[in-house]
Image (cartoon, rainbow, N blue to C red; front, side, top):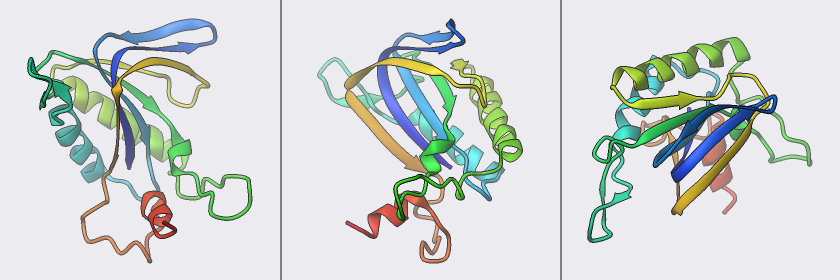
Length: 167
């Protein structure tokens, strides 16, 4: 599971010309569900993301987490984060979970974020969306639930680690 996490001053999601979600200061999470992701990946993301100390304190140091500032969270499903662009010019999405499996993981993470008593908004899974945001910083992080877990990147196709091999 891959999350692109952006600290924002505000963000919104529009579907079919209707704004369906809006947040003020907080985090936008673009979430890509990979083949083989499980509840463990969901739990990792839910434990980690709200506790990331990415908001500045009064001295400007990043010491505050989403929960500390009573920030809001906007969750967007984005399978394109799992694109394989190593060969050719057209992305392949072989690493992305099938839609039925991805929808289950997306709903699990959404429910678990809400269970933390966070202000959570969400896009609509599988729908084309227009995401608008004011990135504050800019501050953008990439979190991979499988990184650092002893996963052999030569045996498991992981787009983040595959890209790193070429740098």
